[in-house]
Amino acid sequence: MASENETAGSGSITNGEPAPPPQQHRKIALITGITGQDGSYLTEFLLNKGYEVHGLIRRSSNFNTQRINHIYIDPHNAHKARMKLHYADLTDASSLRRWLDTIAPDEVYNLAAQSHVAVSFEIPDYTADVVATGALRLLEAVRSHIAATGRTNIRYYQAGSSEMFGSTPPPQSETTPFHPRSPYAVSKCAAHWYTVNYREAYGIFACNGILFNHESPRRGENFVTRKITRAVGRIKIGLQSKLFLGNLQASRDWGFAGDYVEAMWMMLQQDKPDDYVVATEDSHTVQEFLEVAFGYVGLNWRDHVVIDKRYFRPAEVDNLKGDASRAKKVLGWKPKVGFEQLVKMMVDEDIELAKREKVLVDAGYMDAQQQP
Ligand SMILES: C[C@H]1O[C@H](OP(=O)(O)OP(=O)(O)OC[C@H]2O[C@@H](n3cnc4c(=O)[nH]c(N)nc43)[C@H](O)[C@@H]2O)[C@@H](O)[C@@H](O)C1=O
Image (cartoon, rainbow, N blue to C red; front, side):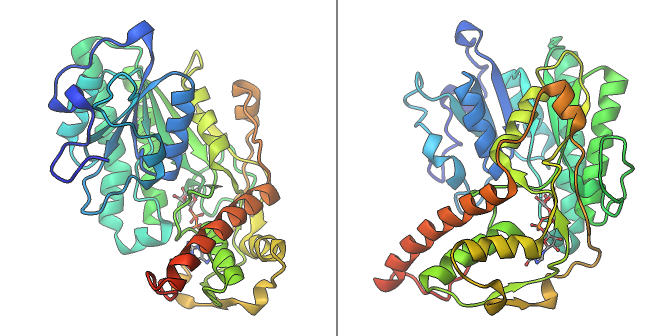
């Protein structure tokens, strides 16, 4: 990865020079949120399809590129490096416009967010700035880029969320009314409608993917699925005994993130832009997730889980279950990984991670109390 005092490391492109013409009409994608779970899977997917992928990353005092380190190639090997990283921020409109003009992408994927629902109650103003106004800034950058360059065939994907449905009962489809229950969800609704508005007002090819919860071994460790599978791994290996959780009765439609990034790409390959629900159409409670995850390694979750009020939210979303018939019919998309397979995949990876942690703990390099 780039060192602290360098730009993010894409050779001449980070110097603000125009991108060289793509060889053999290679498609170019620009991704915000490339360091996140979805950004990493989408980057792998697009690289496999032959794309050149540019990611916008935020400056942080700690490197935040762990999820894409395995696909990073030093930009000094310019002929091999097809993923390039640039510093920018959804709160900085000028950086968005500059990179759009410099990279001239065919497709823009807006995946960046303050994506934790509970945290959005703690930092609502920042959440709205990044999630709602950030999407508006990027759309406006796309609009003014098109106006200045005439590049009308640029395509835009907005990462929407099932949280927008909030308290509206399932099954939820593209025509279900939104009733958001958190600053995060309200901000996602605004981003959704900004996207529809820019499509209708300016004719931009802009799509909303309304994705239900999607998980993986790369999921952030403070989302409930990963929090559980991390704990299962650590308890099984003897590094932890208790797991503190909030509401176990909430129900979610959990799919595999690797499947969902394909749907994002499919939306941008259609003749017309539209909005699509992406979901497995199968819903389980947090308690059912616990039963499968602990049961898989021969443990009883009731021996380890402690309810802690701090993890309850001021307003909860009780029941999400998607109706993905439009995505199935129009895109030909369907999920490949089911609920049990997803839980087991995550537990398997987290057992391996806990084994590696144990080596560090036994050698005195890490304190077992340093729980995620
Ligand atoms: C689609 C949507 O998906 C995600 O949002 P989320 O559904 O809020 O995800 P989560 O894993 O934080 O919570 C799921 C449920 O689990 C309950 N729960 C219980 N105990 C704990 C607990 O200890 N931690 C957490 N995090 N949740 C807990 C919690 O109250 C909630 O009912 C984000 O990716 C979001 O960006 C997004 O767009």
